[in-house]
Length: 488
Image 1 (tube, rainbow, N blue to C red):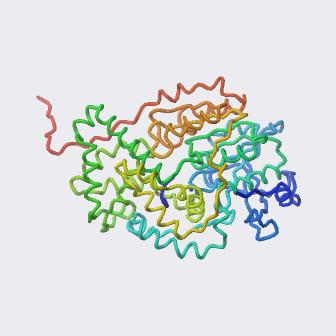
Image 2 (cartoon, one colour):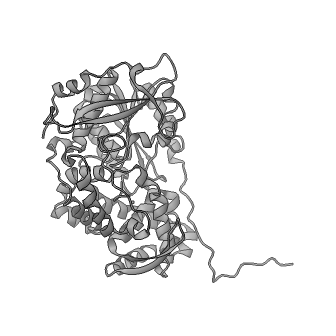
Image 3 (cartoon, rainbow, N blue to C red):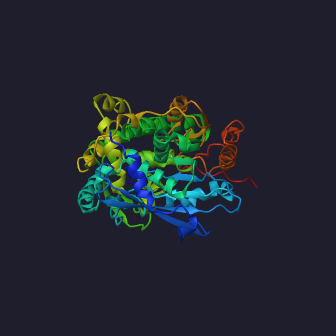
């Protein structure tokens, strides 16, 4: 989850059935199609649902999905539903990353990728992204300036795209496919989808996997500051314990604080664009610097370069710091519906930013930078009240497997611990040296397969993930130290 690139009413059962009654439950009637990253033939379907759950006879939208059929004829009756992150990602566009995780299970189970309303081909709330310059990509002022005309041009009622409404579309897909129960896989924001589906439809879930938990009561812009600050502190401590990093880049913490202090009055920098090489001028403020520091933390291999990048920035060269952020964000805009992102976060998270929340974020080095960005953007986004029960985590009657990365700056283990405790019937596995997203790494796909096959986490052991080492810090050659020469 990141800014741009770098979230009390119930649809009646009658309305859901009405939207599905004309659709067939016969998979043979689904259309043959292709989705990026999946070489096998795929079947695509659509459910037509009311945009506004209170107006079932009003405007309708199409929610589209792709089904990767099980290979075996004698398949299991419970498919796996994939809920993508963001908010703003389309599930069909992350299939390339998710299918290898679920490949073994796909032998006997269908895999279903639903483009959540507002993403992909489900009435997408997308904005054109101007990536012609670093300023257009990185400067919040330019991003928000582009947001206003984009939102006005969208053909949608932005009030109707929150999570608690969207999961009713997922239920409509289940009904259309005729599956009595389903297995859930959610990543990042997709875990919020999964938890809300479990709350509304507990009898329809067989198992659930939550990878990088973003619970409903997690106020995202505030958590961005708290969790990114904790991740930076952890990285600093790891560097201090590593002799090469400690000796080459002393004062890691002090460099961060000094740069943020300088950014309060603005830092004029000149850096080459990571893709074009064209040197550009930027005025770096505290909000932009906060994003540049946070984004590389998603990937430990890139975070291991941060001590070097910060040392360079302290000397006036911001090339490495900008390039690290670009390495994570590159290509994200191709699968990121900006309008849907704000429709979700402006409805579910920003209204919960109160004085106490701001005071909490002010205890971090990022202060209220992220909260200010979202509050400003959300002035442009209409929303409706979210049911209070949405913010509760349901007691689980089915087994839930939770993954967290110990170095994750967005959904760290503290959120997984909290949700596991409230669910009750859950197992939380922490990979201490991994970042955001665990399911595709190391032995995790095997753990996912065993858990779903057996419908139990009793024989799921996460020790293999604990053994994955942290990446080595990048240590540049010190130009002031002459290389050693061999004696003849």
